[in-house]
Image (cartoon, rainbow, N blue to C red; front, side):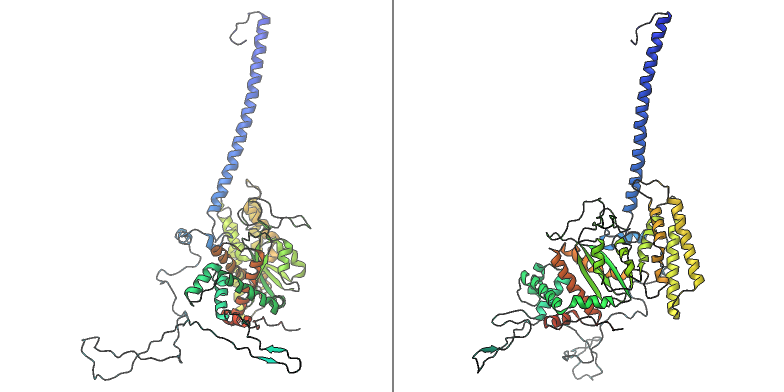
Length: 542
């Protein structure tokens, strides 16, 4: 026992030695346990430091280096970013005044040479200089002032429906009322229907507030239910007229289309609910692989959440919005016209890759690539990730070269010029892969390595715009088309069901496409209610 003296003989020394050995063994075991705990604490600290660094990186991301839309940024983010910027990407003169610059055409009002009404203002009674009376003063050339305004006048039209009795069988036949009118009942006309539809579909105003606004402006009391039914009637008429089939046929005949998708809130029972935060993407039943967007974050809706798919022509002549119950491969591919065999511009979502066998090619949005590269350049340490900045410069040089070649009337880039740009691109992503392959990361590969590997795997799709000048280098056209759904959701919050979402998509597709062909929304709605909606031109028969 400790503290008990042992005899000085050999037996006592052996006993003391054994006890000391036992104590040393116990202490050795304690040291092993403590060292293991210390190593675990060190590993935990390392992981936490990496996580904190990642969180700081994400907090510093904005619309310039991620898929975050500018509408989701905090108030003042753009001004703060401008203040932090050391070198502007577009150098502007300090003497440049805000607003339109000299030579800008502007959008001011022009004088109407044939006004609907002419009036003369009262003659001046006294001089504006000396205040003397102007009675009997000589007349000089006058000035003019023109006011453009709209008069909101409530009108009521009653249609007489004459009836005639058949001399043969005695059956009475009455005249048919015009479109929108019903025998023996009172209904609202096309202008009020257009007001309800435009407020809800384009103004993003809920039916209750739309009804209140209609009551304030035209002075006609309508119900929220009627406002909702106005959109339902228009959508049904467009479907009956064959808008869907005509749009798909017109889109299928295009050489290039752009596609994008945006998540939406649909709490109705017929819509699948988003996956739990941080969960894996839904797997395709055929290959079992998760479909991911390289810019998706933890907080973005999972592939099983409802989405709006936007398909547009590069010149914005045609816009086709579709309600998707999910963003799975089948749903996204089904939204692209089946006969389409041209080029498709997308934003990196792998759900489109399954369509490659039936497409001429896919162009990856270079603006998305630039945003990802910007994000990686901020990682460091130091200038280690500067290769991502080189990729940005190379892609911009390539775009400038394509624009200059197109202006000259060329149909292809100079072979040596393109070869040099591609070689620099390959060297850049190879550098990123080498320097980022073994860097510590708390959850998977380093972003620099992931980006470099992606640039290597999709390089032919990144550079497609240099081989065919009909293909744009960005997907901005479809992203602009997706703003309508984002803005509607930001104001109204959600759609009640997939049916109401599909109805909204059809109406917006019709109004946006008709406007691109010179038909105003009011005329487009009036024509549709009269049974003669605008339809996209039929593709030419080869």
